[in-house]
Image 1 (cartoon, rainbow, N blue to C red):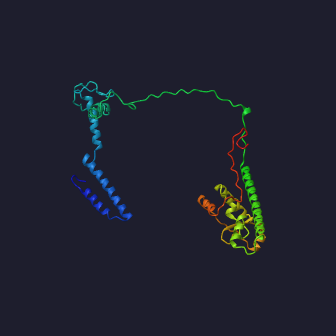
Image 2: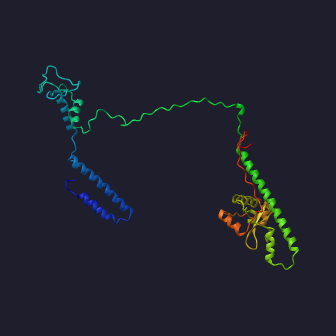
Image 3: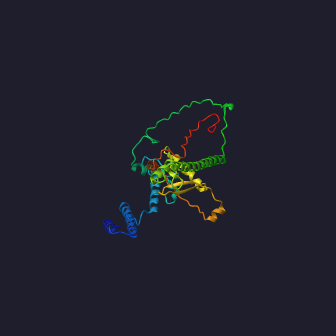
Length: 341
């Protein structure tokens, strides 16, 4: 802390050398504590250089007593043109130019000891470093006057009660019933379409094969089955049945409807001799019968994105889906009866 001592500088330089070897968090914490301590010591040393010995500090009592003596002196100093404040009390009968103090006088009669106005004018103003200005600066230098915008009031529009239309009230139960009825109807139609496609395809293949010779190559049999959308295990190819080449969204919807049929036991998924997935119409078993036969339900996740959908259509040459393409629903129009009218 002494003037000319460079111990803090050497300590910081030594800490910088040691910091290059720090690898643990605990060592870095100790280094940070050292920097904090060095910063505190630097601050104290700076204060010591600016204000003197920081250990002793400023004697507040002595400073206040000197201020009081200075303010009291201003009451009896006639050599200056400054006038003491009106609150100053003088002892009657004392000469205005006298500076000697009467032993019988008390300290309260020697002038106002708290004449801060005198202290400010005599001690503070002469040592004030602010620039001389004409007056106080209130607010910014440039003030933009705001003009009030005149708003034009319009007459309140009145609504004819006869032209008002009450909106249609929909409850959550109504929406649930609507979605459930649509889902049930679509699943029933697809189940019926699956049974018809499987039955008609098998009959058509049998009729065409009966007209051919007995020794028919397997490739020809596969071509005939593909023409009538039937697999060699008696089912319908799943991709030809569900994938709609005209709409990716409807292809996903078709897979969604088929999953409900499989869950309810109205349809089953199998694979043909080539390992391709096929779908079969089925009848659900009763719980007791399923338990006797040891039938268990299995869950599977089928992922279908846009790129996979395009590749499947291209590889299997799907031109038309067995599930017919549904017309896109037009956006609802607003009428007097509301959006649902």
